[in-house]
Picture 1 (cartoon, one colour):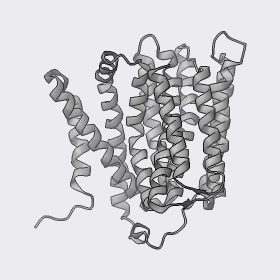
Picture 2: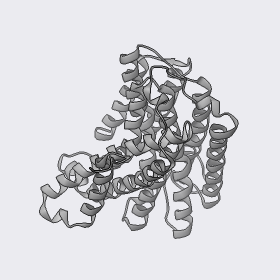
Picture 3: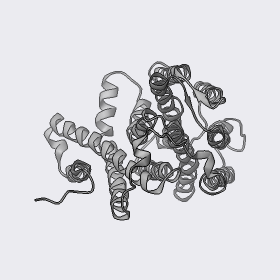
Length: 360
């Protein structure tokens, strides 16, 4: 009789098959090969969510959500840097466009869906206001310094920073993000702990063994790595389809950002369906903060070393949408409880963001 595996077989097999498929010349067999890669990409995302939940159950909150956010962001940074170093014209705006897409997807799309689903299922949900205020304060400061302020500086022409300004803003971003991690994991960890739900079976389930948790952690990195590589491999096909449809190329960055953030999005949605809104908000806001707090310093270092110019300042349209998203999110989360209205409003801002990309 076969020994029962500690983890579902599909969560191990799919990322391995995805890695094998990535190195095989599937693109040479046309649309069928592309379809196989898409299926394996989705399977790897689902496997990543499962392994992230195993690790989170072992280490507890808020460390579980922090691990997933840092893992996704680290690989996202690696993807942006690799595209910057190997790409052609237009790469100077790649970091800005990707970071803006990721932040808008998280703040309006991911949180909007979570609040809508939670509102439908539970009518009203509660969370720790202190656990939300901390990342929002840090996120607002970094967003203003990295994406808005470059439009108003005068040391260099255009919405860019000079070398000294770029170094200063990168250091400030790392200080703010590092301080947030200290608050989240050490000084005020209780702010980010979800209330105990006595009906939640997962809360009372025995945590996985250290061996299973370590295996899931390694498989999580394996899944996230192949998700990014497949997203990069499929980018030309996506770009071709978008161009043929008459849509702007900037939509490619939004699609790739959405694919990379899909594991966190599914994990956040699973948590809110179990009435753990605090966990969902930890995932979403922590991911947004890590995305911009780590990506901007990383690409700044690459820019300074390689001599590449990066454009950080967003245009007026994007600035209005970003500020609207932040303002509405602060109002929505200001009372410590939510319902479907906040979710619907955030999703309309997300729809406006997507619509103005297609029809600027």
